[in-house]
Amino acid sequence: MRRGNWFALSWPLMWECFKMYWYIPALSFVLYFFIGVFPLLSHISNIGIVDYYIQNSLNNGNLIYVAMLCVVPIVVALLVMGFLHNEPKAVMLHAMPLSKNRIFNSYYWTGWILCQLPVVMMALIYMLIMSRTDAVGIGDVLYWLFSSAAMITYFYGIAVLSGSLTGTTAMNLFTAGVIMVIVPVIVKILNGYFVNFVPGYYELPDWMIEIAEKSNPLFALLFRREEMDYKLCVIYLLTGICISILAKIVYKTRKLEIIGNSMLSKVFEEICTYLIAFVGMSAFGMFAWSFGESKLLIVTGMAAGAVITFFIVKLVVSKGEKVINRNTIRSMIIYVCLAAVFIAVMVFDITGNTNRIPAVGQVESVELRGLVTNYDSVNMAYGQVPEEYADTEPELTSPETIEMVTELHEYIIENKLYDSDLAEEGDPVIVYDAGGNEGYVVSERITIKYHLKNGRDLNRAYDIYIDEKAAELIDNILTSQEYKEKTQITSYVDMDKISYITLTGMYVDEYAHYDELYEEIYYGSMTVIDDKAEIERILTAWQTDVSSGGYLQNNRYITPYSDIAVIEIHFVKGSQNENQDSNSGRKEKKRYDTDMALIVNVTDMDENTINCLINEGYGQSLGVQSNE
Image (cartoon, rainbow, N blue to C red; front, side):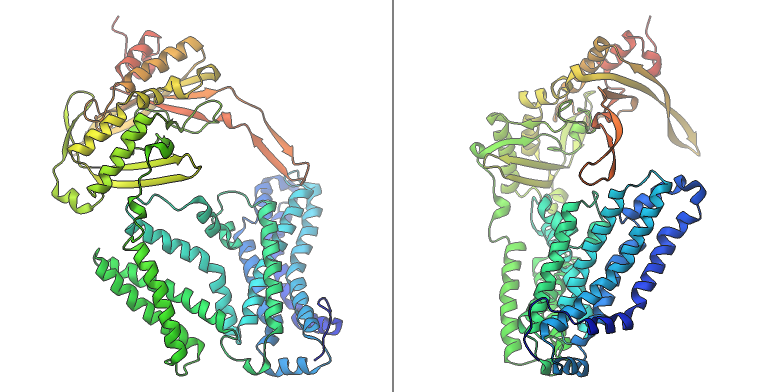
């Protein structure tokens, strides 16, 4: 063995690898061809009908494509870099006048090229197909080529790194799998524990969800909420390169005499042990929790899961040899300390974070939507349009209203209204609907979203038992002047930018069947109203109906009602065309967001709205007639 430069290659070694493993890219290309190209050739005379299939494939939406991006580089890494786990071959290679740099580089780059060859060949075929369809452009093909190469580099790098850290092929495959799924699994575990043990838990931060979804390209493709862009592909490529460099550094420290051991790095062994033990501990804990919501039970389950999983991992790593020794006990003590911190924070909340309530002076605003779940569904329009047309997410900003919200928040925490046992023991609160009829409320879901002056957000959500005091505090918020103003449709909608509204009647037909009464809803014809004055009168009438609502009195949500019409509010429409990105060359269909509409449900309890529609001559659309 001799020293060599960092980028040295051995062409004979590379040629040997190509001759041994040429069948891998050949088989991969055949599969790519039959999945991606053969359906196109069978429709070559009318290729337009498979435009979507082409676009879906080039966006890596094809499940076979996704599987190959993950499986092929891992298989290639296991085979081509298999000399890492083959002691006779490793001894032979290291006895040759070749540096470790040259050996690693030669095998690594051969494997990487074998992975990329079928993708490059498919890209060339797609470029030939471009002349027969307008569905794709050169930018689409280059994007697919680059994104596929980036993800292949990522998966290949992980498999090579795990191979450098392990001494057997089986452990190589196992640790590669652990590395790829551990981040989403841990995030899922944390979310489960937050839901069950953190009162007021709302949801994980967006950045944590994004990391869980995008830490692995496989999950990013399977559960994508948006198209993978070039930026993310570059991140995967750079991550794969960095992982590969780390793999090479680790390989250069390997000793031939420990080939065959499960783990070649003590530090990596401990990290894997702790991570897997954490997953096992958490799973046992949640399993114990399912038998009874007792903290003692879950701690017992977590302790049992930690011990069992920890020693199973150690047993596998040591290949069945003696695992009870000083090093194992020391490692176990360290893990127990880490687990104790997790349990103390997550299960027993020793930090007191769940009781945190910001001071009124620290709060910039509180989101109005969903404050009392479903309440705003009957007194506000719903739908998403650009902010320049409507503020569909209004916020409470006055110190007086914010103080009401913090007072409710404090009362919930101090009295533990989120405790499910209270709902079973307490009496329902009497409230009155819009018709003055008595009703009962037992529980509500309260979602408080603070926007703090320091730029941070504090979100809490509680399923609470309602008592008289809680009902009074909720009523104070919902009947406050600011809440009333912010929920007026003429307040959060820019009336000047409404283009037209549509009115569609709904008819309810009741019929009896086997002594049971059933309802069937029919939709009538659509009426388009584009007169600005009429639109304003109709929406103002609906605003008058909903603004009279409260919580203790005139509670619209508990009022029995039937929808009799749907109003869709459409705004000034923008352009809709197909553009080509000047930077990437990719074809993109751009639709102006204002094609969407806000929806208003007109019910039989909206007297002012009904009378207004009748007076405007639209009573027939509602199934009601003027009294004249």
